[in-house]
Length: 185
Image 1 (cartoon, one colour):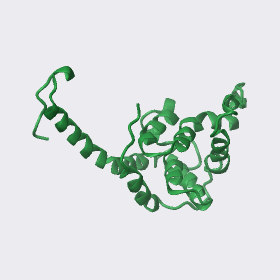
Image 2 (cartoon, one colour; image 1 turned 90 degrees about the horizontal axis):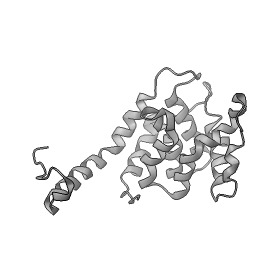
Image 3 (cartoon, rainbow, N blue to C red; image 1 turned 60 degrees about the horizontal axis):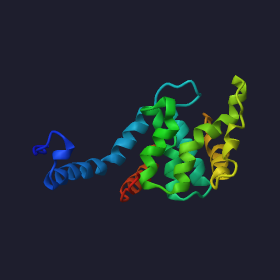
């Protein structure tokens, strides 16, 4: 990038400076889908599971697709653990933040909270409350998140399950990130 803004503090910027910044941001956004695919590929490595983290994501998305989920939900199923690449300690929140400008409130809430809801399957092994998710039992999307975890996420560690390959999902990823991002304040 050749052109640079004229300011060294945002309070001194001009409209022309911000036009340049927003032009750069638009170019960066246009490459989002390709970066996400690269991040998914980074998940295709060694793991303590019987399959890679990528295979887990592919299984989750394949199950969603085979169950008749809409395209946005399938991409959310595919990317629900993408946060593992950059923020393993809060992967659900990282994945939700990435997706938020492009998805519905329902899918955002599911991705954001799936980590807690998955605790239903393992927390009791560590003397924690496996029903911690029930703090949200009156939330509009509570059952949707329970179903996401029960039907697609938690059973998707099976080395014998026949998932669709990553290439199958790339056009869906591209269409999702081609949407005009919503402002998230």
